[in-house]
Length: 229
Image (tube, rainbow, N blue to C red):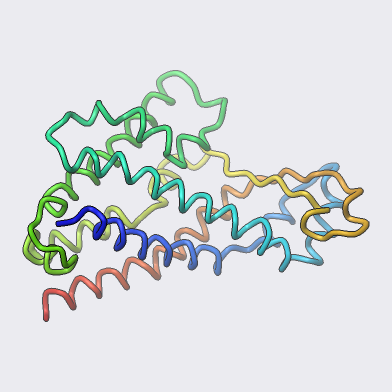
C-alpha cells in the first residue's frame, strides 16, 4: 500500500480531532484561571474571546496538528523497514508534543519513565501500521480489511486515536502554555498591554477528551462499514 494513503487517512481523522478540540475549548476558563499581574489583561481578553480563539487558540492547535503529522514520518519510516526502533527514537521524541511540553521540574527516573512510555506508544503505532504499509492495495479501506480482522482494526483505532493518554497518565508532568499578545489580538490601545502567559493544561485534557468521544466512535463506525461492505 502506498504510504501516502496511510498519511492521508490519518491526517483526515487528526483534522477532525483538532476541529472537535477547538470547538470544545473554553478559552474563558483558561483566562479566568490566570492571576496576578495578568489579571487586567485577561479581563480585557475575556470580553473579546472570539478574536483570541481565531488568532491564538486555533493556530496553537494547528501547530500541534502539524507536529503530530511530522512525528508520523519517522514512525512510518520505522514501519516500512526492518530497522530497530532505536534508530528512529531521537527523531520521534523530538517531534513529540508531550515531550516538548514536559515541565523542567520533571527529572531523573520520572523523566526517563515518561520518555520510555512516549517512545513505546509510538513504536506500538509503527508496529500496528507495518502490515498496512506493506499491503498491496492502494485503496486504504481495502488494505485495512485485507490486513486486519475487524476486532484488530477497531482496537487500533481505540488505542492510537486516544491522543490524550500521556496527559491522562501523568497530567502534572506537562505544561501546555499560551503566550498572548493583546495588541496582536485586539489591536488599538491594547498594544500597550503586556504579553500574557497562561497555562491551559487542564483545558487541553478536557477538550481533547471531548474530541476523542466524537472522533473515535466515528472512526469505529467507518471500520464497521468497511467490513460490512
